Structure formats: structure tokens, C-alpha cells
Amino acid sequence: MKLQLAAIALLVMSGAQSGRPPVPQRRTLRESLVGTWRLVAARQRLSDGSVRPDPEPGARGVGYIMYDATGHVCVVLANPDRPKWKSPKSPTDAEIRSGFEGVVAYCGTYETNEKQQYVIHHVEADKNPQVMGTDRIRRATVSGDRLVLRPVDLPAGVSDWTVEWVRVDSPQTSSAHP
Image 1: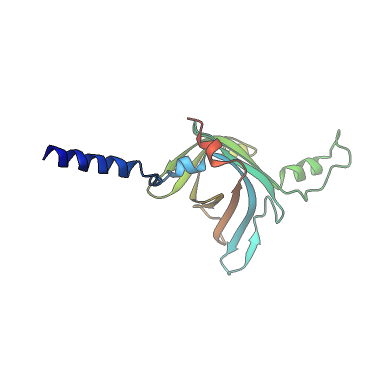
Image 2: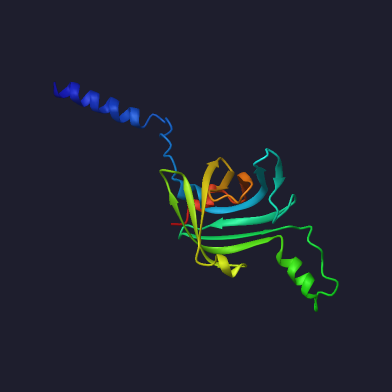
């Protein structure tokens, strides 16, 4: 009997070392977000069914969102088609105003709601002082190297708002930091 138990134990142990890959652990939303992401597209679907680029970064918007493992987020988006200033050292008031239009820039902390797949950005600094101290809630979907964020609070006339990102760092690099 002891010999049979020893044989069974050996079989079980050899099965565990059979070279079969371990079952992958599902990463949490928070773990999946950590890293640097480049803007791919930002679109709004209007209530009438038409689709338009997000007005701030525009159709050719550029930008990044960075989530770190300590719970901090930083976002900068810009419309590359904004007019250049005629005199960079002394722009007019209208040029300064146009420089801020078409830019989204904020940072702060973030938390995730794993059950409902939300990320909440707690805005500490923003180009718009009225937004400082507020929260931005986004539905978040991570699939491979793609991240899709959808604001929950939509402006009047907008039925969906999708902001798509692509990872620019490797998941191993970004998740290796505790």
C-alpha cells in the first residue's frame, strides 16, 4: 500500500513538472492599465448617428496617457493643426487662446472599479482651473496592446465618446514595477 501511495505521489509530482504551461493569471484592470499609451483616435457619436473627431485633439490628435503602479495618471492630448504663432516670443492674446484650444492636459491619481470595469481619474492639475479637484470616470477595456476609454458623463448631443490608445511600452516592463 505504501508503495502504491508513493507511486501515485510520483505521478502527481511528475505531472506538475511535465512542462505544461501554468494557467495564466487574469490581470486586474489596474494591472492592465499600468504603462504608457499613445492616442490612436478620439471620436464622438452624436445623437443623430453621425460620427465626428473629438473636437479638442481633432481628427489628427496626438498624445499620451500614462498610468503608474503607484496610482498616478498623466494625460496630454493636442491638435497638431493648431495655428503657429507669428512671433513665438510675443504671441497675441488670440494666438495664446488658440494655443490652449485643442489641448487636453491633466494629471492626478486614479483608482479602478474592477467589478464594473471603470477607471476614475481624480484630477489634481488641469489646464482648466474649473476641472481641478473633480473626477473623470471612464469605462475601460484593455485587449492586448489596445486600451479603449469611454467617458461616462457625455455632453448634450453626444451618445458615445470613444478614446482609443495603443501601448507603447511592453506589459512586462510596465507591470514589473511594484
